[in-house]
Image (cartoon, rainbow, N blue to C red; front, side, top):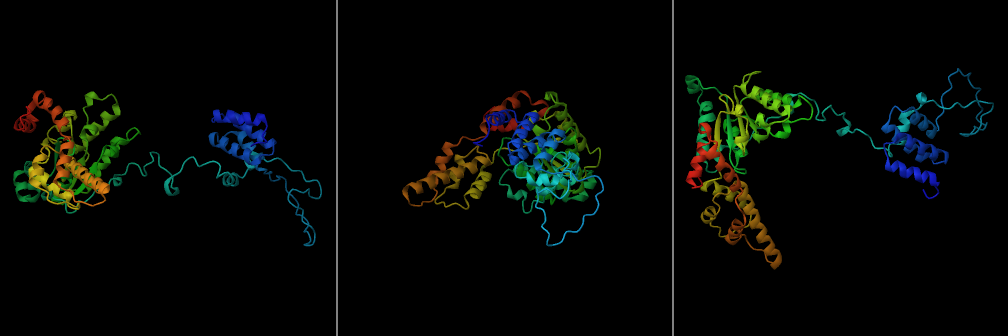
Length: 439
């Protein structure tokens, strides 16, 4: 680099400032080749070809830089065998007799050899995992219902959900009792299908309840998130929703759990993008079972803001039943605290007092409380050099530091309960706010 001419150094700076300028890069390669820097010329020509694979000037320059000659096109008479004692001309030495060396044409260039030589200089443009080619959308085989694998939640039952008896009773009436009593189901004409919308403040166990319902039914469980559905390609999001329900019908009885329904099924009147409206339309079609019966397919959905969900999704035959999942009650908080403290060193913990101090905490808040108390004891042990147990002082101190994450949600829900409770949709929310004297 130090013995380069000022012109080459200037061209290098210009190429660095405009890396997509192919003619400029080829001019630099020409100068490098004339200066005897073959490797530098090959590297620049390779980058130019990467940017413009069909550029004939770049191809011809690569041929020159690689020093490859074209094969003679005219038939050549067999050469006279050379005795073993005769000296063999070294590569590059002039052979006996005038044999013209024709410049190689681009079509006769060995591109595989060139690729191997410059492989360490220019990285590959497209790389598939394990050397496999990528599909159009980069996600493997498109349009296949097998892309979504149903789970089987082993050992998770509603009895594992602490407290929340009202929630369990509603689930029993909506799903569990008809399944356990096929004779009564036939007598009363109860369909083995349905939809239920779980709503409430975040961190209160809506996803865990959905898994428990699947375990109680002995059914497969198909959790669907927003990232599983939305796709950048036109029509692929709708196809994803269709494939999900095809898979659910194939694995019936199956619980399809749609998390964050407000994002997937937001009100179409507020949408500016037609693609998102089509996603809601496709979801409505699948819930109605137009393309295939939904017998044995139970749709559970969860949202923190049910008032942002498109009203059409909550009409009869779709997600027509709504269930409020409140912060855990006393027995549920006790069960959650025991779970998060079971493997931690604790002593003299008064669960009754701790349960009273955590009224209004969500399940996530309780997990954070136990983590904060453990941090306090750990830091104290590190400072003193003496390991101590987690006690009530740590737990109550953490409870005072943590503000329940459910409070902002109830502040927003209060306005909905007061002014947007058309048809009694949020009667259970109104009743809860009245019990808490927040309405």
